[in-house]
Length: 139
Ligand code: ZN
Image (cartoon, rainbow, N blue to C red; front, side, top):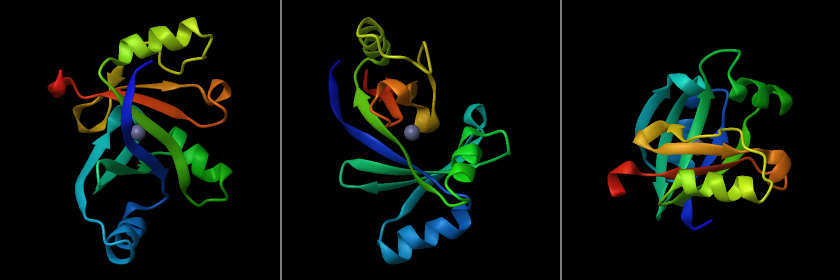
């Protein structure tokens, strides 16, 4: 597959309200977007550093996979996934399938910031939950 760069790093947090001041006051980054992604049961907050974004993820309900992740991590957040940017998510999924990689998403779906996204299964990606994304506006 052809990946261009790391698009963002996804970080789970039990509370955006508590996490955002750390990223802003300690790391000196600026939160430029807060968005609820109903589909994924998360509220996201975005920061830009160079060409890479940090995506903070707060669960919006108990059934959210982010809620389960936080629970497994002793109630604290942590690095949840890495997202790679590509020009063609569907082509990457086809390529991954051909190479025997297990997929979480068989087809691209809508993610935060209007991106088309899909996740590869961590069982097939050396334990790192991997997201592939494309910006339809750049097509
Ligand atoms: Zn993500």
